[in-house]
Length: 347
Image (cartoon, rainbow, N blue to C red):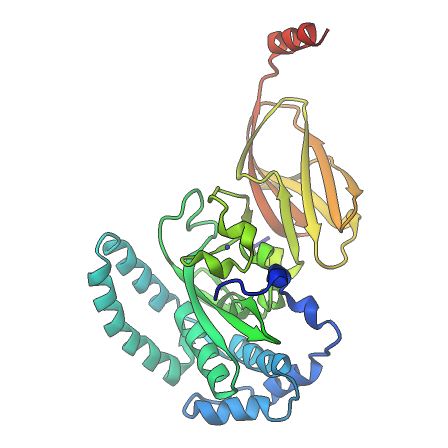
């Protein structure tokens, strides 16, 4: 709810399905406990930290889990660094050479702050994950691209503003984002709240708000050739509940008054139909739209509703109070003449 108020090369055919469920037989409790036991450790000696986080664990995925969890729960977001980099990206949008020169100098300062105060932005999180993986003999890459949120890259890809990681486990590449796993900002204050939904995420879900510069890092052949469209907005809660919005597949949808509008989602973990809501705000008051829900095959859920009045609505799909997708619905007047003509043609 707070989010409302305030997408290397594909080498294996089934890589598109690379996600945490590949490791459902593995209990991450031990790895998470190792991360907790090392809580508060400094960054003065990364080889030693990587050793402490991994030497008790048997598999690479458990070692990576401990590294990822530790970084996500011990490093804080730095809005000052993030805002400064974003400002410079905008300023040098059409002069990549100038930005690169500035960025190379500034990264030295940013990494110094990371190692001293354990505060950073997305590049710092991704860098730290890669370095710890290097010392643990795990292949890991930093992926740069467009992070899509309610205030960035909404209707078009305007600015490269985010970095995340790809990690190779059991000869397969997986995607993760320690930055967005670590927490969120409430105004200027960073709230550290771990979100496991960004750990080894399904590539289709990940692509809802991660668009890599190098499209092969979608890890999905269909997504690589897909033209960017402004899809519905998704939030941290989308990843928390592991829900993939399917329909409507555009941010803005036009529908006639009293016409049935269908929403469709796919769930990657169990979800109760009665917990689903379709809401909008009227004078800061939350209003629930009447919906009919139906569980389809392949963990797909269909929701239908109707709008009785014309207008522009920002509507939000939610699990209880957790908003996970936002759509703009333009409700127009029913075209009676057109409907009569269509009926005559069909007869």
